[in-house]
Length: 176
Image 1: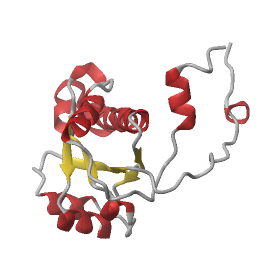
Image 2: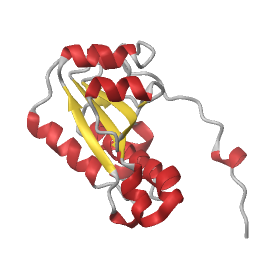
Image 3: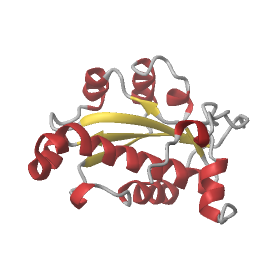
Image 4: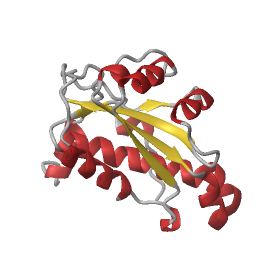
């Protein structure tokens, strides 16, 4: 079994880190993280997404307020906002693109970002967007974009233990 490969090690050692140091992140590292986002698989390669890099403290504080005051949003030196563009996907796939594929595509991009961040020695946490309208207004997003996730990124100021999982054996059915 190839459980000890660099990719598998990255997957198994990544943690959601909520306590982040405020140390700045070099622009070239942020650009590499953006490349990881963009490299995600997506239906038909239509790339129905937009990415925002938020470093402005006032904006981060507002995003924190609209994220149930999850302090990592304010504390992180960088917050990535991943947005879906449903109509871009719908142009090729109709309602499936609008209601499902664009969401799956942005989720794949977020996972790429989380793994890339971890591999680069930084930490992050995935924060789902609940107050979509407020976040969109704060960022002055175009009407064709839906904020899907906030990803605060920085150097870890904690190292949580692995979360206990159910075990794939309990949640998997084999259909032969």
